[in-house]
Image 1 (cartoon, helix red, strand yellow):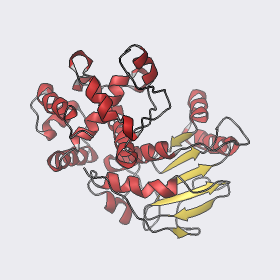
Image 2 (cartoon, helix red, strand yellow):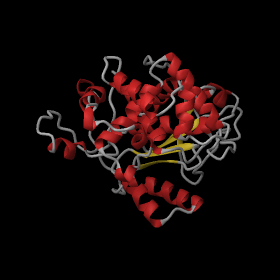
Image 3 (tube, one colour):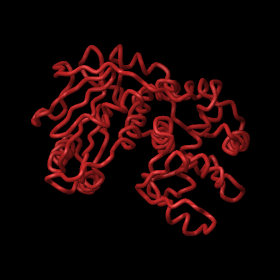
Image 4 (cartoon, helix red, strand yellow):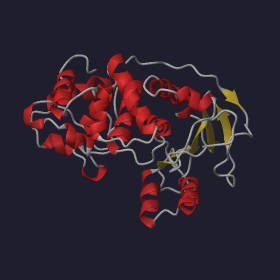
Length: 325
């Protein structure tokens, strides 16, 4: 799949037709072709720079995505309309201070009956997708500093989250398996930045147990283009280090290992790595949108494999080749 650099129409001003999700807060607003950016005490980047690029990456592999926006057929995971606009735009809210971020969190906590634990985790993380898949909220500084502080680079989490959101919109599913949502977020990051941010794992612990490893990676860090995930994963795609299809599809965030995280990315990449595979993967997405469960059996059948071993054979061979880059 080729990487795309998107050029988007940038429109300034307030668009009254776009749904206001936090009407009690004052926002500045900018519109891109497919996204609305609302800001409070901060600038429009990284959403201005990377939203449309993410859309172009996902457009290649999600059939009908353009119609969802142009015909306002973008739907929440439950199938309801995401907005009343003639043309839908996905909204990203960017706030400067922890105080404003916490205000958004508490509004949504009341709106969706979040537990105290959910509220606390969200406040610490500093970003979240609307459970109804209509918007993304990002705090650009330390979310636990009420007055703000030094701005942080949030471009990877923006791209990762938008990739996940567009996947959910095409399938109309809120409870897609982790391998699909996280994996497609990683894939979007890789295609936009040539790297993936490490959100779910501690590579450092893994490499401490492998003295031959030369890469110093930390939880929350990134692997740059010169230290890409494909190169690392080729080292992990050997014998006993390999992660099976069954384990990859059943991965959970709370028990995720470094190997599993990388293999989630690699599986999603493999499934769209050629035009033929991408077409079959699109059929898989269409089936889920039509109400089918995203099971392993459906994946194998749609991709044209009789069993796990057959898919694993092609998948591992591809991972070890120069085509995985």
